[in-house]
Amino acid sequence: MAISRSQLVKELEPGLNALFGLEYNRYENQHTEIYTQETSDRAFEEEVMLTGFAGAPVKQEGAGVVFDQATESFTARYTHDTIALAFSITEEAIEDNLYDRLASRYTRALARSMSNTKQIKAAQVLNQAQFTAVTGGDGVPLIANNHPLASGGQFSNVLATAADLNETSLEQSLIDIAGFVDERGLRIALQGQKMIIPKELQFTAERLMKSPLRTATADNDINALRSMGMLPQGYVINNFLTDTDSFFIMTDVPNGFKHFVRSPIKTAMEGDFDTGNVRFKARERYSFGFSDPRCVFGNGNLPTS
Image (cartoon, rainbow, N blue to C red):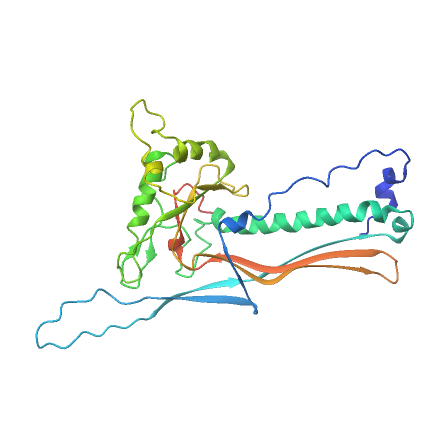
């Protein structure tokens, strides 16, 4: 339905001082703190995890060398969604000079709606990271204690016991990340780089990360997290996280979180011959997801459905 004069009656009255409600600032591009952006030219993208080789054995004198095979482990798929929204203004509203005063404001409102949806979809990967029905390429949720390995074992990217954000849980998370293994069970040198938190944990994170001494203690101990330079990229707040006591540590694993852009945002405007209305539209196609679940470590507080 087009925006008509009856919906904008105050706009026609003399002495109007201000319009408000469409000028709010917005949380914009918070997804760039999490995702690596790539482009796509197809309906979906797939990335295949390769297993590599097992540990090299000792070769006995005169014995033949052992041959190993690298195989495909699992495939991560990114399926793009189309996001679009539009509005229109009647010909009569345009004639009565409402176009100049309102079109730009509603265009900004349209941009805010498109941006809001993008941030929600980006955060959804973390918000649903422990949903049993939302699985990655390896068949289990993003954050789980039973990620299967090609070698037959499993690895975990979640605390053994769920815990709120504090010195102990953060230190244990970093220790566990340093113990990650590859698909063949070989140790890999990963470190936590950045912590993603909801707005409710920003003050706790600030004290943990930046206090010279340990928090919540009268001892004159140094803050090891700060002095050792742990989490070199610090922490960032994501205002679209829905669980108030969950935190996520991003690692330096390659091919982790990815944002594929199939079609960048495009805007269009056209007039309708029958009605004379002017229509505005915004549209884009993209996907958010992850390939290697070693890209993140969680504290285990998320819901499972």
